[in-house]
Length: 243
Image 1 (cartoon, rainbow, N blue to C red):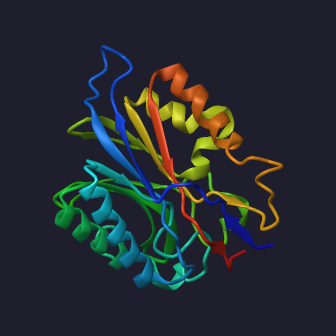
Image 2 (cartoon, rainbow, N blue to C red):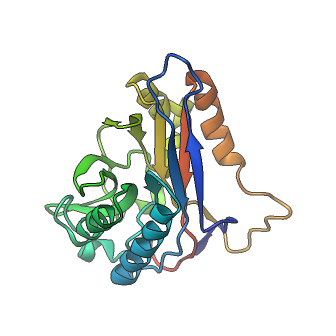
């Protein structure tokens, strides 16, 4: 069955983040939630579109831009088996690294990754000098995507000028008992960033069944329990191929 990504209301939203806990080291910063249309399998078009939106986010005053999961090829698209690149060094990573340097902005993005013969659904944080700060390989991948992506085997956090950032991808946030998000908090995360690719059936009626409860149920308990911010950005567009 084909699935379509949920359409949200804004191209990108610049949000100010600040500490909710007086003892937290988190410093105020602006995060751009960049929602982009992803054309399945169209690597160059998607990277070019991402670069344009990153530039808009930087002009809007963002310190960090958060982009969707597998923004380069689209979630579950089989072209990942041929077009996935290394991190760093691959075409997708290097294009995003260049955009980070050009716009003097930090990026958090989801891209496909090749490691030898294995392909991963990965996410990266890139600093304003274009350097890889942290990489995450999705752990809680849905069954329908296992034919395309291998499973990751670890979690990571990283230091930034604004505080400690935890990194996960989409359904990682819905793991049983929110164990992955909670683990990032125990690792010291002040903010969790999550590139996502939220999908619904093509006949989904948003008026009858407003979309979003899944993510409120996933994020709100952890955010309240640990006094952390959790931010996610998804893409727009169809899933045209895949398992």
